[in-house]
Length: 64
Image (cartoon, rainbow, N blue to C red; front, side, top):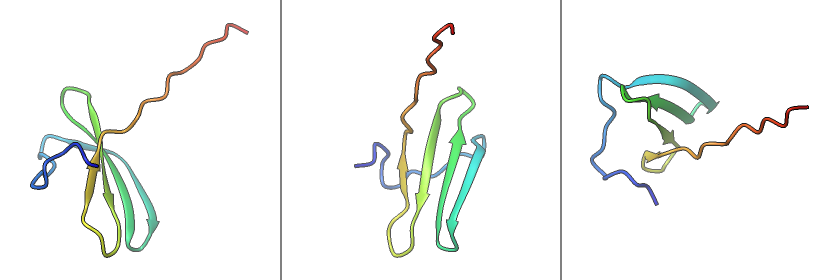
């Protein structure tokens, strides 16, 4: 379930960090807000657009 309200739209201040063109009708856009937080817009054919906050993966520094 999305943690964004159904009427949510990206702000003009939000910048696109990456765009994955999976197919001609499936796309993921990662946005960054001015405060540095990110969210993803998932566009799929025959489905409503879906916004979510991506999970962050920690970088492990093993000192090797």
